[in-house]
Length: 167
Image (cartoon, rainbow, N blue to C red):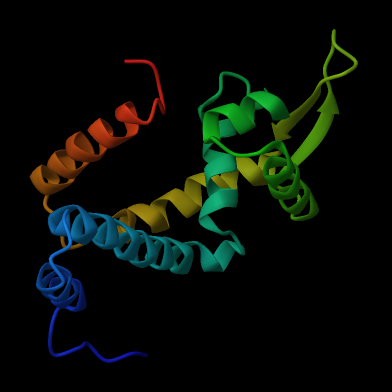
């Protein structure tokens, strides 16, 4: 385990950035903080999911299927909703299928489309794994509900500005 540094390296980078006379020091610090926070959150959530041999990416696939009406979605639609390349979805589905948590099924009316369907084991796993993720405060233990809502509101602006979704 890495011991905590005796100083905030992002604040120090900001000080050095300013010392060089470079613009956008606050933006650099915000971007770097987002990147580091993502590493921390992902590590915590992955640790919570370890008993099920899941990564956050595979867990997201299970949750997406769990939220669908029938537990079944076309692979292409899953890629769109999770904002992942089709090759990444294929890889995730392959791994989850190997684990017995979902299965591929043909689309009933479109031979070109393959569906992913949650298995009974997949349904049970997503419920149990979610309990562990919630117990880990979804990786943001230090944030209050208000902090989390504020952070989501702020980052939503960034996502909307990048055309992540229609506003």
